[in-house]
Image (tube, rainbow, N blue to C red; front, side):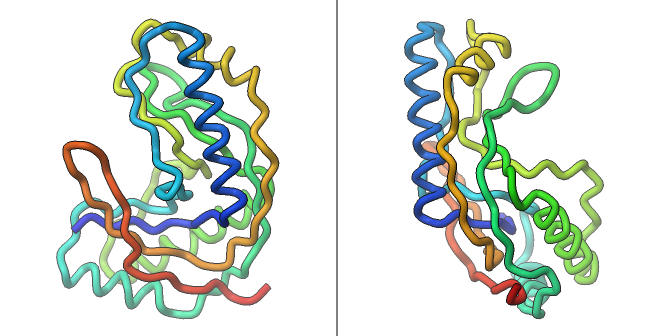
Length: 193
């Protein structure tokens, strides 16, 4: 099975992020340039802390046990930030929303998660951690450049949404020919703030 560890949004933050998705879709359609995309469905939106690829049943159980230990990182307030693109150079692959308030706490949470995963046999994730909420995966950019996409971004101000991050969720990621879906394995509460 494929697992990922993530931070969820509340209902209001999810609606705000979905509003950005609709604004992007409208802006891309208005630009008239074909951009083959896969939109992330609102119910699938989350901030990924770590994607674990394929794991065995035994590894999955080890991850569940590691996440069930009480967290040192406390619950914290978070808010959505502006839109951006990955990667920063080369062929574009992802349009995402950032996090304004709560970035430092997310980094601390990621750091604590990495220690837990290393303790149960996973290698440490050495890539730079960027707090982001993927909205769109681009199959290829077609006729619309990064500059064209950034022009669309400049016309959109994401709705302000604040929520409390008080738990971490372990998801199973299931792929089909149509789309990828994420199913909750379990959630664990962060320390009381």
